[in-house]
Image 1 (tube, rainbow, N blue to C red):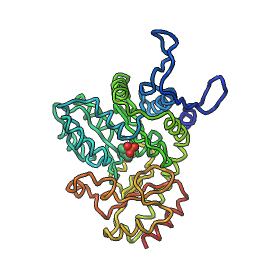
Image 2 (cartoon, rainbow, N blue to C red):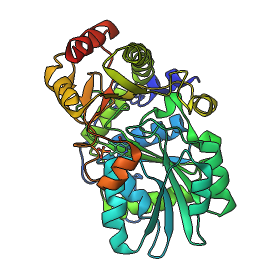
Image 3 (cartoon, rainbow, N blue to C red):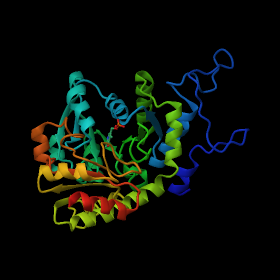
Image 4 (tube, rainbow, N blue to C red):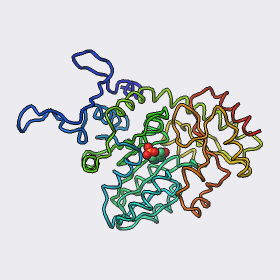
Length: 376
Ligand SMILES: *Cc1c(COP(=O)(O)O)cnc(C)c1O
């Protein structure tokens, strides 16, 4: 079955009632048929039928052995980090999601998980960061907010050479555009809050492991620590994923149109979008993904101008988050990346002139018209 058909058919119900939509099993506990017997479901933290449909569905889309659903993207990131132990070392891209930076730098450091932050687009720098105790290389591509491209295959090779896992946060592109496990990565993480849920109305996270043995470790952490996705929210995410392909195509087409328009605007200094021909990572991106997604960043001449844009937008909302049907704009230096140390932020180019757009699925002409009046 092709990808679009798989998304639509996640959770199509086949029970005796004939219901098409999957039921929401809003039950904390499950009756045992007899002593020593189980229906397969005992208690919802361990396993819930609605959540299981979602978990099997995302595993199928990402081409992994098994998937797990969490109450947020950060709960998913945390569950993955918890498979490691004190004295282990990870290598992670420095321009990762701000919350991921914070949990690694401020929380897991307290438990003795060592980390080196690197420029993931510089393969030599990543290779040099690897130590004897390196257990994982964690990447995002495109990165947030500067849309740098990381060569997933090169990261997999580096990880293999040292017996470490290669972990990819695939939030920005989703399995519709990029499937890291099929390339050989070990784990994929999602903030499902973004494109998978897609409507700015749900907070959730997902993890998929390529092999069953590693999947079991994630499952053990999920059950032991308990940040599971509720049956209701699992159902909403199943419902959302059915339109993933349609939405991603429109996000992609709109972002290309907006990026090209911004490139030619006199008030815009630079545009960061992997779909632009001049993007330095485009050729690598084209080898590992089939679309560019809906995220782009751009700079204006000064902080005042950036603040003006945020104030003047009408159709576009000045709000954090991304990946929903509505177009959002944000100032990463002050919002999403406030917890990244100032020196790192400055080195990365996350200045107060940098605006990040999550291009929605409105008509592109309306998005461009709103940006035109805001940049005037
Ligand atoms: C938003 C985001 C997260 C965190 O997800 P939440 O659902 O907000 O907890 C992790 N990684 C990336 C790339 C994100 O954009």
